[in-house]
Length: 412
Image (tube, rainbow, N blue to C red):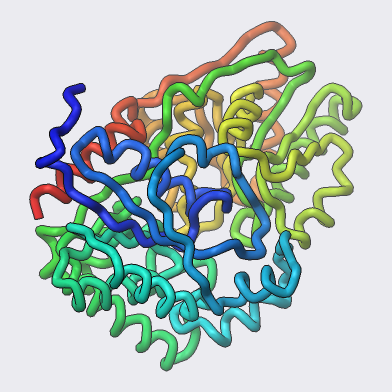
């Protein structure tokens, strides 16, 4: 690829609360954009926060953007204050939810806004790109764009008004968020969303933004998806965070039922959780002897471990706004997928299955159906039959998706 000339390079200010060494999809999406944007004539500069107490870290992935300009500011949000007080690893407990709901205007990261805004005012840039959640970052971007006169680009990694992980409750919270959402999308020159469901919900409320809203999903880097070793037993893997809307107990019961009916001991089958598990669910899954928990791994290690499996599992509830961010990564693995729970948020996976990708969707509590499917897959494994699929979304690599973003930015 021809390297852009110095005169054609534009500077993009990225505002992202989540950034390495914090792990997870919230850091991964802006990092991958930042990694590939220079190839398309856009130089990223990142403003994020200083160290905070968090449940998952990934220092290895920072190598992807080694040498990039990153400014880390102070903050008075709870995660930063806990870090200052000495906490490094934050474990989510269920009772924390009520406290977070009380200060959900629009989230508990709002105290970062003045720090990020102050830092941005001292820098030079051509565009400001803000990714959320936390949605308070959008408020930062709004004021930066208004004071600088530079174009605002907003990236919805989740729905805002319909945010499923910390729903807005009561008239006051909902009106606050509705008013800010309207102001943000009206001022933004470009709106990027990860899923059609978010796009459609925004268009229903704000039909006037039709010409500036685009879907750019989360993608995959092909080089990350390689099986490096054959598992020593039949291995089923789940990749991602385990939390309330992704309760894995039904699929675990299905495996336990199959093992009991066929008198298989725990050395024959392994269910592997790759990623952070909230404390409540760690206690629930301990009773299943065939479960193995890796904890949070670096991104590349997590993908490698995931690919070293025979079957993948996705778990979701019925809300259209619960859409696993790793659907393209599941498809890129080539692993057959058992989906526990029906959701419009899984339309990409459902479309892939409709196009021939090996996968099966079950009602959330269909333990018998999932047990029988696991039995069929185990029988095939015992006979040396390996099932592999090929993603129908080959074009959704991180580099191609970043090209799409760069093209949209340059049209502003």
